[in-house]
Image (cartoon, rainbow, N blue to C red):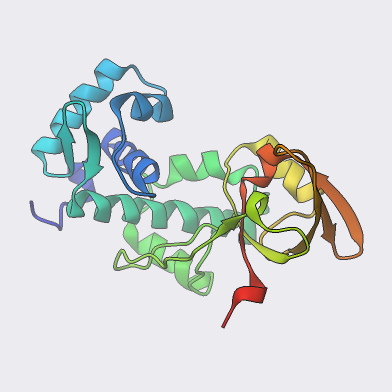
Length: 229
């Protein structure tokens, strides 16, 4: 396929499919039709039909009972959409007064409508940021994406310091909770104690304590300053 496939030749739905497949396969492997249907809130039969069309365009590889993966061309388009989405989120927070729990749905709408020229002007105004407000990495214009190894907060050993770098959820209520608790990208915490059997975790955030449940701690992706170098 021509890797310069224009956005005009793809529907909004096709772009959403490619982005969803990217998210589902980011850790390796393939995405099942059922997983994709759940991610897009669609019927499996509808998903199967779209996957056949995307395969005809050489954007996905789809094998019955083996799931779907992106081709290099499909991945390129998915990363382009991620760049648009994350730059729009960053702009809405930095310049239009949005909070990080309200930008996702706005960006979902705008990412399909704005031009590449506008996206690059947004990037310039923002100083070419590397991350969006949630800490998600922003792909470069050429489609490359920095690979960073994160450790979920739930897996940080007791007594160790960690820096929250990424909050892995788009759910507004979760994001509002993390904001109120001061658990946002750039914050350093120390794991003070952990109850057994995936029980609550007690953190030191500066001079104060914060208790967080296992279900939420797994959403906080961290780097470990003590392991650098």
